[in-house]
Image 1: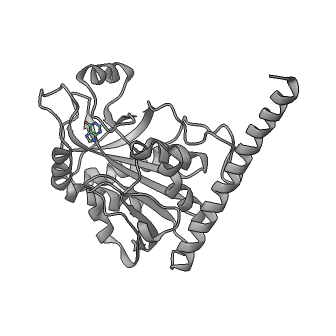
Image 2 (image 1 turned 90 degrees about the vertical axis):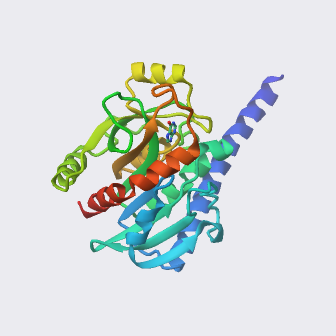
Image 3 (image 1 turned 30 degrees about the horizontal axis):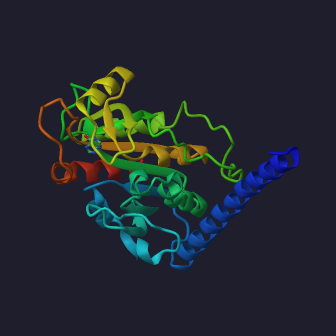
Length: 292
Ligand code: HPA
């Protein structure tokens, strides 16, 4: 390749990253504009509801409900155990925007689509992001059927959602990840839940790409790495939220003991069934996180 051709190729790549950034900006603006026109005016808190945990959406009052498939650029919520709706309304006097169903990285190998709804919520002005998920418990002291506050995370997929040109209007190129999950809110939430008789564990969430569950050997390795629970989501949203300086609360519903711990094979039905059993406590704790 000649020096001139090499230079041309380099310029092409630069131009492509710029085009991608402008395309992303345009999509965020289009979707947030659509939602504002539909009545989603000034949300303060964004909530992402995980697998089998969509019922919190019923707590929201004075709602505007919009199915994802009516929203431009939103491809979220293809899994059966998700409702696939955006629910906007009020709760405890606050304006809340709930995603009943998320888009997972494993659905099409795209971090961009996984975090797009979070980016739209940021553009719409949320200050707090409550991220929820179902996970497998790795820590031997954490029983399935309980809730765990996420204190920190480990990201295994290796694809950071901030790769590409930086959206400078939301945050810096190299955002801090020391304090992703707000410590003050975590301790307040723990106390509030304890007063209501709900024990909240606290621990490190490790994200795999999924969609296969982990092997027992992987779970043993994750325990050595310092992980307390494993799941297939949430970390991309948390990174994008932290980039934009949001207060983040992560709530994980420990649906099962992780692979190899009990010897039982894992099924998605088991995960959704346990989600139903934890429903009441989960709804109470998310509600407390809104109220804080
Ligand atoms: N592994 C990964 N994701 C999960 C699990 C699990 O054991 N349970 C619920 N989501």
